[in-house]
Length: 161
Image 1 (cartoon, helix red, strand yellow):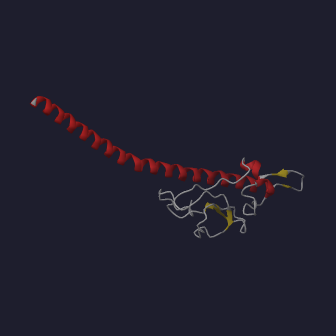
Image 2 (cartoon, rainbow, N blue to C red):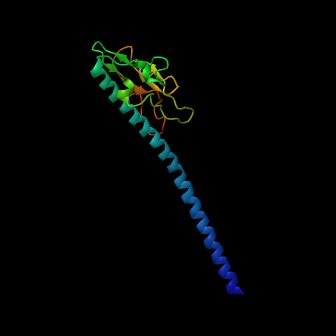
Image 3 (tube, one colour):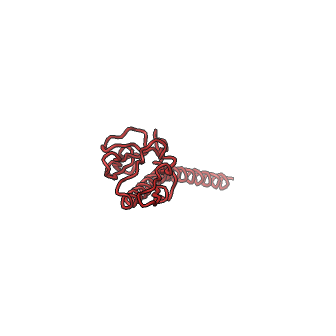
């Protein structure tokens, strides 16, 4: 009988140790999953920013000016920016960008998805609405994510990206 009780005690101790190990692993992995989620969001914004900049430069090479991405409605329908040049060629930012609407910045704590483009040449001036800051008025073609530094906990200052 004493051996049976001793066996049950050992099994109980092993079960408790296994449960503690599982809990420790669980608490160690969950924060990393959250970090991975934010890392993917930061990478998506950087990828979208690169695509926007590439399309803007290609558009500029064709037209000699930058498109008015901050025009009301343009963020959701880039076709309203289409025009025909003096040679009769249709120039379409949507075709160059290969999308019909601007990609949004990714949601985060207190920030929603937003694809609006704000005409702004002070890229440190963040309005808290997410989306993109774009210097259309100055015709520099410069564009940045309209996000606070470290929005996705990656240490990125979006006004400098």
